[in-house]
Image (cartoon, rainbow, N blue to C red; front, side, top):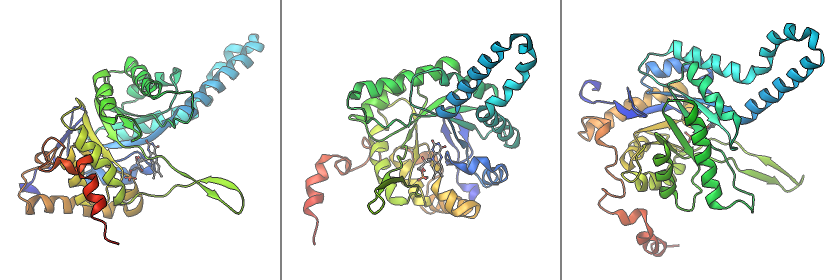
Length: 336
Ligand SMILES: Cc1cc2nc3c(=O)[nH]c(=O)nc-3n(C[C@H](O)[C@H](O)[C@H](O)COP(=O)(O)O)c2cc1C
């Protein structure tokens, strides 16, 4: 069946062997599983993130160390080799990039993930990520805009400045992983693309704290997604497709082959799998890949690229479904 369907797609300038890619998650820490997923057809690997907090902690540790050293100047030179120990977070990450790059076929991009919110020196690590062999960077600005003094324009500028900071360091393609919470999401996506983003990942998932009413505490919750989370992505993929000069990638709520088809129809060039892989593992991936192929064959598509954008806002037969036009109709359709 595979012979008649072309699963190749394009993302960030790469020709991917398939549209199902490993999303940022602990999966990439398991080299063996990652390799098997790639053997089964995963088109790219997005690593879990190297966090600004880790990098800043490393820098602070190094600064502290330099101060200690200068206090004992006579012995200073002997101390310098030990400074390496203070880069554990970043260094380990760079080693994992090298290991992944060495273990995976050349046509499977290793996409490192940088994750932070402030404009500052941590973005310079992009250079080391590139030197370690990453093929691209996914930039996750996991910023919760809760400061009443920060305007919407300032939130957007923060993303742009961080993107600029990374792009100043490297020539690699950079995809920005976005939150869904912008006043005018497509306008902002266009701004990112016009600035230099090569790809946009829709969307980041903010982990919601819950309240324990008996103990009067707030606790973070980490629960895996389900397919219902895809719908938010579909609307904004549909709206962005054709309006933004960047490749689109779906992240969030892809749990079946048909979910992946929907994401591509609305405009995604490829889809990331995180919760699904954490839950279903290699067998689940093999099943999804097979079902995607079967779906394409049974619906007489020659390849996945034929799907991309066919149900975007500009091309779907009923664009009102994605916009306000359908809103009143939907509310009125409720029968208790
Ligand atoms: C356990 C776990 C770890 C994750 N780690 C990261 C991470 O390091 N960086 C990141 O950008 N996203 C991370 N994510 C978010 C996923 O990449 C993804 O955006 C989100 O889970 C929605 O996709 P899904 O529905 O396929 O899970 C993580 C998700 C989970 C469940």
